[in-house]
Length: 309
Image (cartoon, rainbow, N blue to C red; front, side, top):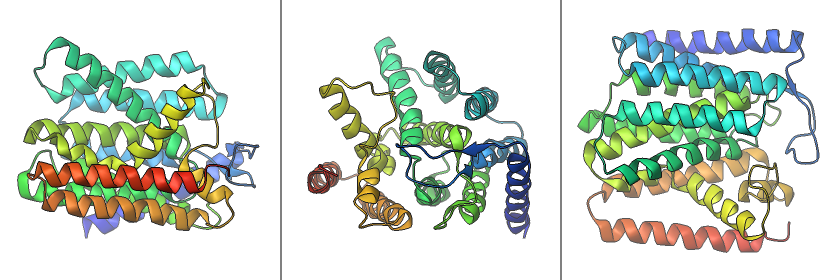
């Protein structure tokens, strides 16, 4: 019953935020790189860092460094939603937060491993931001991710369950407003950046707790689309931080053959299938490698079909 109450609470908070955002004209204005064509409230993802406040409180103030660094990151991201700050400042803040996340993981590695981990976390946070471009994708994909983390945590208890339950509730509440043909609000940087940081913290908690790197495949589809797109842009000598429309999810929408929601469902179902196979064969590295290989080849095949869109 308490969780139903929190769903209602989070929906109410987003509704109130939308009213405030409309009053102060916090809109995402469409441009040539947008996948939408009408001004829409941005920043609805503010509910994600709010959910972590409840996680922090009900876990008896666990993961303090992660909590306060996430709040700081969310504040900077919200300012960026409104005024637009420099790429350098965003990067500095993300590096700071990623260092706090690594510290909170409480792990012991060789020095160069920390550098790689820092690079992966900063890159992963930005990947979540890059992938937040159409209605329903962030909400549905994140829902699949958190549900599987809850299933895994039920069996091995790698993290306080409050850090899974309340973000899941927040994603459900946000979906009510975003998983629509005409979204009432978008995530904004505060939403996509914060949910990225939350997701990566939890994923690495799981990886280091189990000492099994295969769990990174819980975010495989996002990693494939973001990673492949970045590699292609680097190869073409394009600025990877410059907004563009070269992600597969954008090409599928631009082809006019698929709607926002159908593409969001497609990406989320693909990750759902990967996750189902992953948790059933987590200790069979041959199957895990085969899963990664087949997913990668399939992704490249689909991209090739829409390369000229």
